[in-house]
Each structure stands twice: as C-alpha cells, then as structure tokens.
Image 1 (cartoon, rainbow, N blue to C red):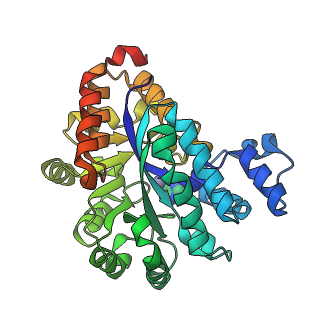
Image 2 (spheres, rainbow, N blue to C red; image 1 turned 30 degrees about the vertical axis):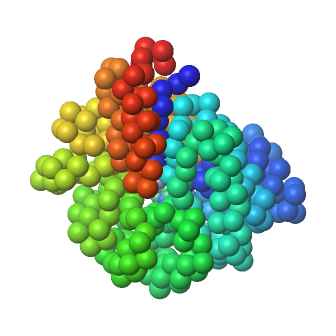
Image 3 (cartoon, rainbow, N blue to C red; image 1 turned 45 degrees about the vertical axis):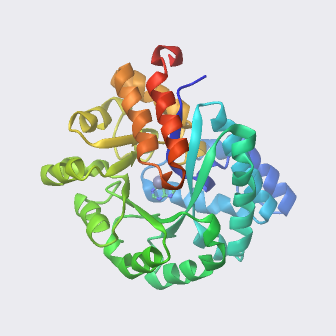
Length: 333
Ligand code: ADE
Ligand code: ZN
C-alpha cells in the first residue's frame, strides 16, 4: 500500500475525467464542443492559468444534478483510496454552478453524499471547503456565503481561487471576516501566478491558516522567514505548476529548496484530471525529478496531516501520524 497521506489542495471539479464528462453530457442532454474524449484530451495544452480555467469552467456544463456531483466525488475518492489518501480536504466552486442555474444545495448535497460514505467505503475522512471566485465581485462572494448558511454543518472552511493576477486578497477582506464570524476556517490561493505581496495580504487581511500554492514566496526572503517562523503550511501542486507554465520543467520545481529553507510544504494534485496525475502519481513524479529521499517523503506525509483541519478529531490525526512514522518508504518505490 502506498504511504498514508492527506490531500489538502484538490478542486473536485478538476477531477472531471473526459469519460465521465461525456457520460454526464449524454445523461443531461448537454452538447460538448468536442467530438470525443480523445479530442477533448488534446485540448489539455495550457499556456497559463486562464487558458486552463476557460476549459475547466466550460466542462462544468455537464454537472447538473445532485447525482452528478455525487458521481464526481465518488470517482475521485475511489481513485485516490488506491494511492494512500486517508484524509481529503476538498474544494468546490459554488459560483461556477449557481451562475449556471444549479442551486447551491444541489452541489453541496451531492458532494456531501459521496463524502459521508467515504470513511466507511475507503477509510478516507473528508472536509469540504467552498472557494470564492476571485475574478467575480466581493458582493457575489458575500451572496455565496449567505447561500451557504443552511449547509454550514457540511462546510469546514472558505478558500479563494480562479484568476489571481489583478484580484488581490484585499478585495475579499469583509467576506473573510464574515466567514470567520461563522466559525469557518480560512485558506486562499496566493503566489501561484500572483506576486509574493498577495501572500502577505492573504495572511494579514484575510487571516488565512494555509496558503494554497505560495511558491512565489521564494522571491521574497523576508516572507520566507516569516512563513517559516509562523509555520504557515503551503499546499504545493508541482504537476499543476508545470502544466500551467508557472515553472518550465518539474526538475526546476522549488519544492526541495523550500523544504531546505524550513517551509512547511505539502504536495497536492490541484486538478488531477487536467494536469496528468492524481496525488500518488504526483509524489512519484516529484520523487524522481527532485531525487527526494525517504525522510523528505516522510516529512511531506507528516506535514499533510499536521496542516489538515483535523482539530475536531485529534485522535484520528495522531493515529495517522503514527502510521507515517512507522511506514517503510522503500515499500512505495
Ligand atoms: N481553480 C482550479 N484550479 C485552480 C488553480 N490552480 N488556481 C486557481 N484557481 C483554480
Ligand atoms: Zn488550486
């Protein structure tokens, strides 16, 4: 069995495989602008974050019913259960659905149905994190938070995603204050395509506990020092960074340098259907490309549980951490 790990940066809509997209399109009478799965896969050549987002949002047209969202999450969970995932904190983009006329409740009820049976079926505990689309207005984000209120028993936190440059965290200060007042945990994408200053804003103005991506912190030594001192977890997504041209090749990914600098790094898959690998595949690729040793892998696995929102189940966190310490990483070669 692969080593135990938590996934902390995963957009459930980014797990929509071409086969499921076509099956749901047929079921819902949606016509996709691609002849078949091969033609769709050939479109997965991105030049930047926006070119990916255009396809990512377009394909969501096939997701219409509670059953669709449950099928999407079921497929993801079944797949990563074979890759050692024991805990998953899953992002979803409510505005990308409500703007198409799909009710907030349809999305949450469908996803939650799959998540609730994951522990029994696959031994995976889960949390749900709703992301605000940063290229939409702050008012729209606030309305989305309002729509979430009947479902807060199933939502652990809020995040911030979509097109980063030109949409700084400061735009969402009031929304994050309101989310905190509702007892929601806070994370945000920052420093993926955007500058290190966005990471500082996310910490200081939004009060986030983790930074999603954050790799551009490496351009600001003072910020690195702060992130190390405050032990702020970074949810890195190396395969995503290559596919979205944030870096040129995996061999140049700063992960190993970031770990050496003392940063609390985790490795995640982001949008695995689009970026060439789920989390186990991602670990295998970075292990090869960056020549990571067993103890570095153990640190990454340990960090994934330490950085997770398992505060309401410290017993489970302790048990998973003990599994990490006991694991022989040679077995996962
Ligand atoms: N939405 C889905 N994947 C994303 C990413 N890598 N960055 C920003 N928004 C996203
Ligand atoms: Zn992401």
